[in-house]
Length: 179
Image 1 (cartoon, rainbow, N blue to C red):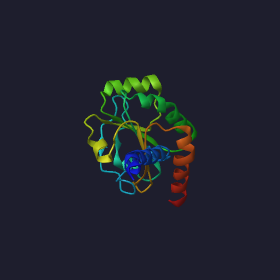
Image 2 (cartoon, helix red, strand yellow):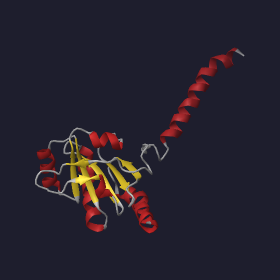
Image 3 (cartoon, rainbow, N blue to C red):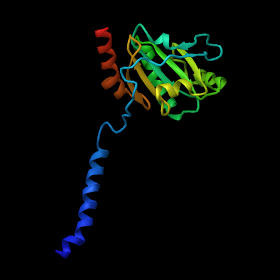
């Protein structure tokens, strides 16, 4: 009986290790829930990036399925994601809008000049007012917005070809068929 009492902490520890290991293997470990799924995009009107002349407002996200991408010139992951955004803009007929978050306007402008500008419209959110309303936790983040102006999906982190092909593109096609 004493041996069992001595082994009990070891058995419990082994059980916890197995439980944590199984949880780490969960394919949805990078999915962060959003309270805004199936809710209308919060109302906003952002100033445009200098020299762009095309401001961004919540009204621009209605009428057709669109993407809303949160980025910043300071964001290293945004650099990794950017070729995929340019590919989406080049190969798919979907409005792609950006929010330059917590950024100096001139730094954002220079970043896009250096890496290319895939966006239809860009709004500046230097004070995080819109990002807070959207529940943004970091950059990059991308929202799929339905034609009714409701958020249908939120992706946290860079969009990879696999995420685009397996998750985002099928949802976009489904939303287009049902609208």
